[in-house]
Image (cartoon, rainbow, N blue to C red; front, side, top):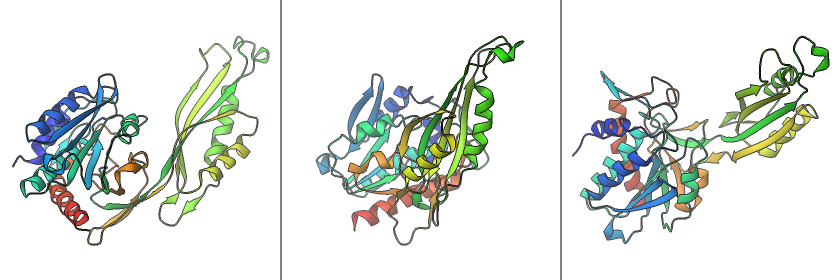
Length: 335
């Protein structure tokens, strides 16, 4: 049987930033077809597709589906092995996980199990259009094991998310005569600390609601009074989104325009006795895959190194995760 580290390194060598997943989708599809999986390629947008694989003996149906995403954040970082670690973009988020799922599923099939499926998605890192499309597929899955780097714990729950954009309009003028203009940046700089200091909901399991100012834009040149300013924020939710929205609106008042973007509610996940469990603070595709059965979240690696230039996964943990995916799948099939 192929070493999971070899498959992981092959996946890592293929650039697949969000929007450019075609090559990695082809690799995974060919790998599965060569091992007699029935593979459905679901186009999400031209040149970008999800991969759904089942076994002929199950007539295209599956009771347990293993799923993760094939896209990564930018930029592509090629793989390298250093001692007992495998580095590269997607090492833990989530190509290492995809490799572990491939090997685990193949081992289950070799032992006579056909009631399993594999679902590999595009677009998770930006908008999750792959998950939205996959939720239209005709599935009979009872359980969905989604893969994200949970440090090899089953996740008990996950924070939700809310994207918020704040916009302020000013009036441009020559910077030598500031009285003739009205800066949009100055009030934005005053507003943002008030927003980040808001008293927001907490949860005994998921912890505190947090906010990140991810993007700031404004002005056109240093010698022009800025006529516009914009900030993009991400709130990590632990409870009712309306409480957060009301707090934002009370704080902002008429100082800025508020636009709400994508929203994912906090989640509670199924856990199985005999497996360690802990909450996570990030979101996944799970809320958009509600037709795929009762959700579980598990994966090797740490989110603390995901999206960094030195993203890595411990090879011992990666190899151990193959057995965990097998054991978890067998437990669910027996339930």
